[in-house]
Image 1 (cartoon, rainbow, N blue to C red):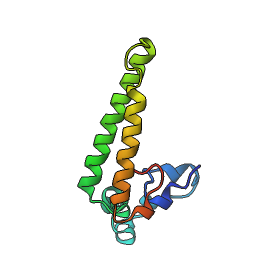
Image 2 (tube, one colour):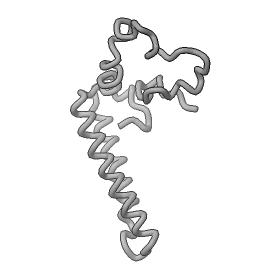
Image 3 (cartoon, rainbow, N blue to C red):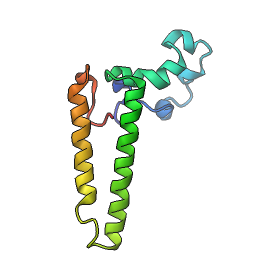
Image 4 (spheres, one colour):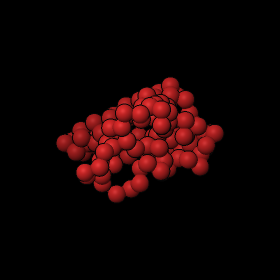
Length: 118
């Protein structure tokens, strides 16, 4: 299991599988004062660790999401009708990868980006 906490991209509750029988950090009543607040942790910690604002991160993630949805639809149609969308999915995934790398290179903290951060 990859260590997702190291990059600040841990979805809520991922660590719960390894912590059976122990309380999660969010179960503690003073979690807000100890960790800068749950809102900060859920909304701002990850984008900040990448050198991005919440809005810029959200806009980029939505753009990438729609690009990948389109790639998935094209791949599904191509699976049914091989003559259609012969290179659309692969091209879109490659373009999305290059888009992410461009944003990463322009980030104020590119060293914090893992291979899968968006």
